[in-house]
Amino acid sequence: MALGRKTSMPIIEVDHVTKEYRLGQLQSLKLGLEHVLARVKGKAVPKPAPFKALDNVSFGVEQGEILGIIGNNGAGKSTLLKLLSRITVQTSGRIAVRGRVAPLIEVGAGLVGDMTGRENIYLNAAILGMRKAEIHRKFDDIVAFAELEEFIDTPIKRYSSGMQIRLGFSIATSVNTDILIVDEVLAVGDLAFQRKCFDRMESMIRRDGRTVLVVGHNLRQLERLCRRIILLDQGRIVNDGASAESCKQYVELSNQKTREYVGGWRTRNDQIMSSGEIDVKQVQLFSGAGQLPVAEVAIGAPLRIGISYLAHRDIDALEVVVGFHTPDF
Image 1 (cartoon, one colour):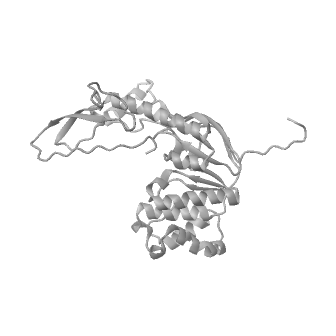
Image 2 (cartoon, one colour; image 1 turned 180 degrees about the horizontal axis):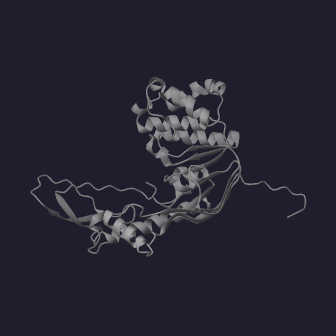
Image 3 (cartoon, rainbow, N blue to C red; image 1 turned 135 degrees about the vertical axis):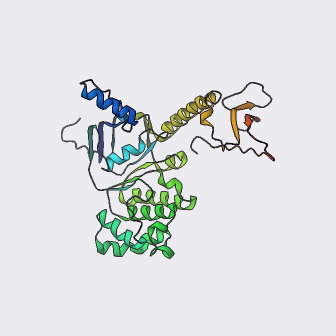
C-alpha cells in the first residue's frame, strides 16, 4: 500500500462470529429427577451439545453498499441480523457497527397493540432517534406511504399483518439512519407494496448513500437491488460475491435438498401432511411415458405424478391438487 493513502473503514465488520444456543433445556420429569439423583451421588450429568446458529462468520460492508443475504430456513440469516441490530449478542468473535441502525426484523416488532397507528409512529420514530418536530414534519408522508390514512387512529392490534408491515417499514425508512436492516417480512405484503418498498430502498441508496442489508427469498428482486449477496448454509458462509453467482449457487443448493427430500418420500411418510381420512404412502414424478420415477423434469416436458394412498373410509369426488414453485418461490 502506498504511503499516505487513506483507506475507508467498513461501516460494518463481522470478524469470526459464532452464535451458539443450548438445546434440550426442556426435559421430562423422569429425566430431570435422574439428573438430580446423579448430582447428589456426585456423578457427572451430560450437557446438551450447543447448536451453532452462526459458525465462524466473517465479512465487511462498505458505506452505501446494499448487501443481500440468502439461504434456506435455519441457515442463520435472522440470527445474523439480530446480532447486527444488537437485539442479541454473539457467543464469540467481534462485531463493529459504525452508525445508527434502523432494524425491520419481524412483523409488528416495536409496535404496541393497544396504541393507535398515530401513537405508534411518534413512539417508534422517537425510539429510532427522530425529534418530535421532525416527526411532525414527516408524519403525513409516513402515513401516505403506508397507505393507512383511514386507519391511522385505529389500535394496531386491529391491523392485519400486512398493515403492520407497511407502517413499520414506512417509519424505519423515514428515520435518517446510516444503516437499514430489512428481514424477509416484506414477502408478506402485496406485490404493489413490495414494489414501492424496493423503489424506496433504491432511492435511499442513490440519494442518501444509505447502507442496506436485506434478507429474502425472492432472488429476482435481490439481484436487481444488490451487486453482492452472501449465501449462508447451516450457519456458515458458502459464498460471498457477485449476486448472480450467489443466487446460482443457492438454486443449486436448494435443488440438491429437494432431490434428497423427494428421494426420501418413499421412506419418510411423516413428511407428507394429511387430514386423517387418507394416508399418503408414496409420491413419485414420471417424465412423459417413462416408467421409472425421476427427481426432476425439464421445463415444458411432459410430466406425470403418481400418488399412492390408503383411504380409511369411503371418499366421494376425490380431488387432488398439486402445486409447483421455483426455487426462489
